[in-house]
Length: 494
Image (cartoon, one colour):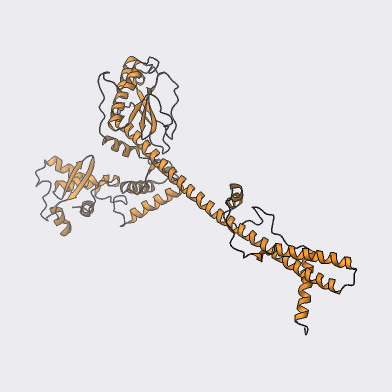
């Protein structure tokens, strides 16, 4: 074997089945090895696979010698002309081992793919200006590795344009790759389409009898009704409801299509309380092309997730083939709306819990402020009562020491009696002070505490009294003098 054949055999022996796009150049060599019985080559489901045989293992263990027990092409009985073609192919490919065919360092390709995906998540779009052929090949292999091993983020795929020449643009696109969507659609259960317009669903029968709808050629109208009948029957088999108009207030989140053109026909499919209109129409009603004029299209309401909402007749498949995809589109919209409704309900519940907590905290702060103001009033009353009592003591001393007329003394004594009675009346300790009873706060009283939940309790009385009362300057001076005289009597030596 030449060097290229030995390298290819080692790759296959290490588990590389040569199915990647970067291994296309090695497949001719693999077929040459298969002719010698060293590998087995097969294609199943459009996928190219190569596996090593026992003879190939023996050859690798013996260092690649041809006499390791593996039969040659001539020993297999191939015609001489075919043997010569295989030898020429090996001879042409053997002297040119390149970087594109040599295996990368272990983990290097995966690391490059992970770095690419991380960069795409950040930047969403990468433009490589006019890369060389080797650079372009490196980017293609890295993208292929990321796709093959599922490194793309969920719900997104990598799209590459300009892989042949010019600038190379790599973007991360939301949605499902068209190839993956086609593969998934091919695996769906087909929807049977009736051949006759009998035993129709009531909604489809009503549409058939309405001459103002589906105004199009007779053959297209008949086909449209058959397609709608197939969708209606399949929808009811799934437990959905089919109606001729949207049920109020069962409207889906995406809105619904307005009735604008008489050539359209539509039915409403109700899934878990959400209504979705299915509209069928002639795709090119104004065209003179006899082929395009026979194409139909079916549309669903636009989905916020960006999933497909329009199907039409194409060379790759007709609408009859797309009916399973349309039903899956309806199911996907219902699932999105259910999920969105669940999220909104959870958010509403969280907002309600936050609101209740805020009201509880506001009521607690309001009660604390109410108790503080009650205390302020009692302290203020206590200070007044003590100041008035001190005033009465001084007044009584002056009355006893004065030589004023008796009438003035009597009037002073009357004023003294009233002042002492008033001091006793406002004294908060005439009864034992206790925790005040919590009032029922109104929404207006709680509003300042709700608007500023993070701040401390607002200053000032928000309830039934004015701001905390303070002693006026005259009373404060009087209290100071009384306390000064009392201190001098108690401490004459100071």
